[in-house]
Image (cartoon, rainbow, N blue to C red; front, side, top):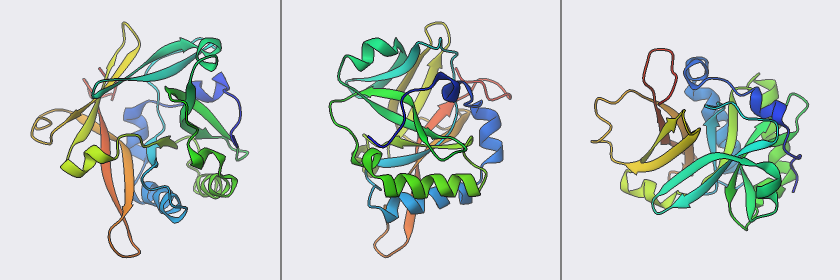
Length: 212
């Protein structure tokens, strides 16, 4: 792969979703999305507002598994998941242009985009020049098909167990719920233009942006 080994310092630098969402514009997000679409990864890579919900030990990483229609992430020892079928599913860029995993998923397949040095270099250059390396990240887009039915994924975070649960929901269910958009997907809308949509939102429980 064209990405670096896990570095706990990179994970610890991820910010709070409430604070991060206030300094990111849709133009910032769309700029990175254009690069994703340009390299043909619209169905496989999405843009994420860079954030974390839990503190981890240096030997731990967030590891995501699929449970029916839910995706559940929680800390696991890095040594253990590297011995299993695990691949990076969330990458953060450093100021020197290198990409580091800040999350993993249960998968035997390496995402082709993670091996594409030209794509990663162009995405890193955009983030560095726009001063966004600590604000935006890229993630694998494993649930693209459900978006066709207008489904949005909602993320709930349980502090006691340090567990994040992402599940599909409908726009109707989201009425009246305080949530922050975190993840954006990009597709070609029939011409040469990119069309972005919100894929996942994070439920918050107070004005500071701390998640449930």
